[in-house]
Image (spheres, rainbow, N blue to C red):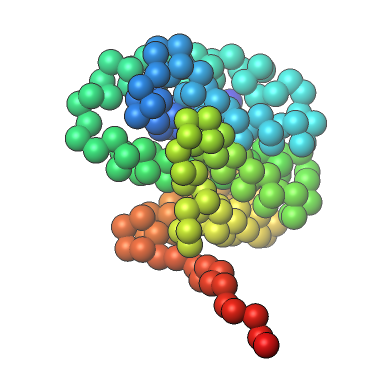
Length: 207
């Protein structure tokens, strides 16, 4: 059992829960729940594996990932009504899934001996694309693109920190744990305290 295996399964579970909750807001049926949950759960990892030419793709190699996503969807289908604010739960689940998925992407690229640049990019892709697919399919404003919020920035910072640390040590778990912690801390700060980066503000052209 590798770090990539553990991190992929953990991010699949949490992203699937967030996907199923978004499906509940869209009032989909059970199959819709399962589809959105699975898309959210494996979307980023699938794109990562296609770019890295990992064969087979992680959820084909380990179909248990789809089973985890499906069970999460079924569970949420019967329990979503119990949450007072599903949007708040979605945002925090997504933050946790983002942090874990970025680490999974970094670990996968590092295990294949990719360069630091590619490793960072794969971390960001793995973390961000599943949630983006979820929100686009369900006609929600994508969390990844919300104005000024730390989302891609948080993923990039975590992936950079982990990649730099992996080049300085042979211990894998420490950099991956630091990646998860840093990514989640930045995203959580953005959610709870409004941390943000400057956004573009149009100005009238000079005459």
